[in-house]
Length: 128
Image (cartoon, rainbow, N blue to C red; front, side, top):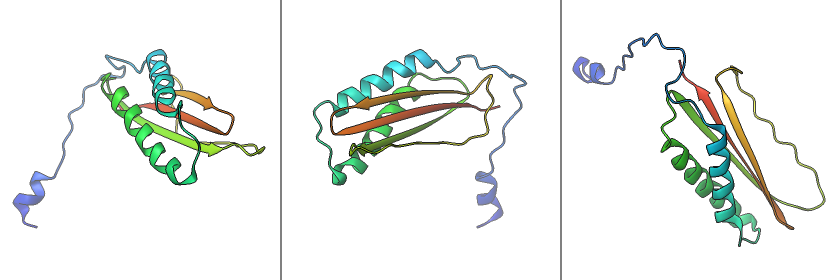
């Protein structure tokens, strides 16, 4: 790689000296979007081990696309979806982050049927 090529790949960011977003992460809108996407994709589905993985990827992309279209200013969007079969067992799901309780937000929605559950979580992590 030449020096000219390496200069093209260098990113520089200018300080904005802004500590609050112009358009903050909206928990209410995100909750509605999560609920709609889960219900639309899962209302007529029978649980299958083979299709659960692909279905998770599809739902994650749909949720992420919808939330990013809201243009929340200076937020990194992280989406996690878990789909599992109900067989008289308990489930505990944990995610760990460094967290600023004033600016960072999350939204969680659980969709359940008689034979499976789906949990979707969206994190809006503020970027300085």
